[in-house]
Image 1 (cartoon, helix red, strand yellow):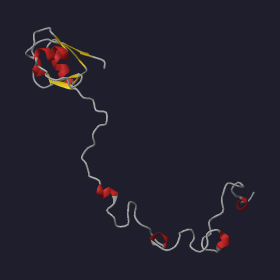
Image 2: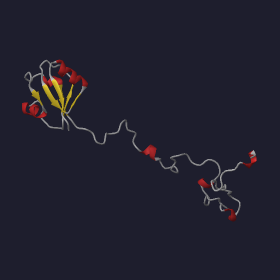
Image 3: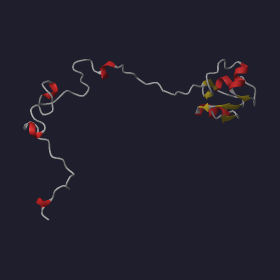
Image 4: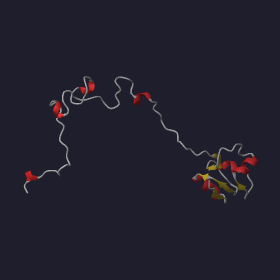
Length: 149
């Protein structure tokens, strides 16, 4: 076998397109570019996103700093400092907080945030805790229980 004997397998390649060589070659006359116009001329075409002088889409849409989360979780949030007025060793749930008037509306499952200080030990049952809230509740001698949704 010689180097000039090497060829691709039969049927694996297509013949190259010979444009502008007459009607029998398959791409005669305008070579598949249609009649006249910007896209039929030689050289570079238009840049990506060019819309013929119309204000392009990427310039028409507003440039936002962030996008909203589609399925956002809504919580009834409360800080640790609001639990300081409760009795020691009391059980804290969303229902008990609404009964005491600490929380006025039910905006979803209860979530505890870590702002403020806590000196009484309370047993909290909530859907979510921040790391700071969990640390402050357990440091005061209380417990945190995560409720399943």
